[in-house]
Structures are given as structure tokens and as C-alpha cells.
Length: 386
Image (tube, rainbow, N blue to C red; front, top):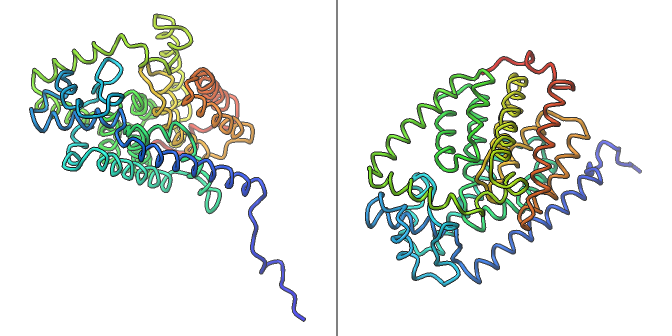
């Protein structure tokens, strides 16, 4: 009688990995089910509705009108009352690029456009995971399900925010930099900047201080082209309306609720602490300039700790930052800190930003400590800057 050898037996995943997979699968299933239920109950969602009517305004009346509050109010009047208002907390303030991307979807009713946009965002997340997430097999698949289980990611889908597209564009920038395709990398980062500048603002600076001048210059050139094209399309009237809208929303505390202003209030102390954290991120990026993964992670983390205008979906960019740091095989205690971030990310969506703010600042300290005193202290000499 022949007995199968141990080599022929199927390999079972470790118990911790199997348990993690089951847990995040339930979390991802809950988020997907919640999106479907909310869509069936009310397929008109506040943020995407604003992007949609801004695109309609541009197509109907000219792109200079996408920041006109009265125009957006008129175009929103047919929506349910809870989803129809335009005010300082809910109006279009993004660069015009987002409205241009939404414009082709205005040929279909808003619910269909919203569903298509969500599928595009889901595809962007899967692609970003495919090229940038570490590990293989079940371990890598677990990271995808974990991303889908995080509530800021769910918020990105629910509100129709471009946060996941920004994440995918930054992942593409990282991938292209790794392949030494600087021009394409700079172009991808420029597009991300013109979708949500506050989420990526320090990424190009992290590239600059790490000695990656070619992608930085390509990004700068791309931004000049996009800025020039935006100005030409908007015209003087559109630019003035954009400035007026930015001034209009500036006094709304809701836009800074998820920043350090929540802890210290708006004022010099908050701005100083945000500036300090951004500067620390760039100093560490300089120290770790030989490690492309950490440079990008610091650019993303530094952007969020530096930003003075954030909402829950913006924190989804930390998913990419965590994937990139995990690629460097950090020690167990560092990975446990990343694991703790799951709870703080969920708390953000529940309206409690304090744990996440403290977690992000502490992660910055951890990266500083490991870069100057730990395993990453010698990284500047390990790989040349691209």
C-alpha cells in the first residue's frame, strides 16, 4: 500500500493567514453589500452629484460656469431634497480636470453614471493592488480584500470621490519610476495632482529631495501644461469664479475637521504642526532616498499630515503607502502598527479623526526612527536614485 508523501500533500496556509482572509472577506462583503443597498435606496449621492452637475454646467453653458453656485443649484434642483443642496460644504471646488472626466458620463442618467464611475474606481484599485501590493497568493489577495473592507475606501466608492483614481495614478507613478520611465511617471503624477492636489502634494517633493529629478521635472512640466490648458478653457471669468468659490468654502470648518485643526483649531499652531510634519516626511525621504518604496510612502503620508483640507475618503491613499512599506519587509512591530491603523481608519468614517491623526503622526515618527537609527539607516547607499 502506497502512502502519499508529505511533498504531495496540499500546502495549507498558516492559521493566522486563513483567519485574516476570512475576517477581511466578511468586511469586504459588508462594504459591497452596503453600497448595493444604499444605491438601490437612493442612487443619487452627494459628491458625485456635484461632479456630475459641474460637468453638465460646463457642457451646457461653458466651462467657466462649473464654479458658479447658482448654476449648480439650478442643475441640482431635480434631485431629492437631501441631495440637491449647494452650499459652502457641498459645491464644486476641484480643478476642472475632474469635471472633464465626468463629462462623457452625462449622456446617461446620474444613477447609471454613478454606477459606471464606481466600477471604474474598483478597476483602478484592483490594478493598483496588482502592480504595487507585496506578497503572493492568499497573502496578496488578503491585502486586496482588506483594502475593500476599510471604510475610507468604501466612502470613496459611496461618495463617488476620485480618491481611488488618485491612488492608482500614484501607484502608476511609482511603477513607472521603478522602470525608469520618468516622462510617463511625471505625467501620471501631474494628473493625480490635478484631481486632488491635497492628497499628493508632497509626493513630487519627495521625489525631488530623493534625487529623482527627471520624474519631478516631468511632473512640473505636466502641471504647467494642465494649468495652462485649464486657464485657457476657464478663461478669466472661470478663474475668478473658482477663486470666489475657494473663498466661499474656506470658512466652512467641515473641510478641516479631519486635519490637525480638529485638535488645535485653525490658527498658527495647527499650520506650524502641519508644516513640521510635512518637513519631517521630506527629511526622511532624503535619508531613505535609495528606497523608492519608502520615498513614495512618505510622500503620501506626508501629504495627509501636511494637508489643511481633508475628508474621510482622502485617507484611502494610506492603503498604497502601507503596501509600499510592506514591500520593504519591515520588522514585526512595524507591521503591527500598520495593523492598528485598520481600527483608526474605521474610526475616521465614524466621525472620530483623533485616533487616525495620532496614528499617522506616530507612523511618521516610526519611519524616522527606523531610517536614522534602525534597519533603514543605511538605505541611502543601497540603491542609486532613478
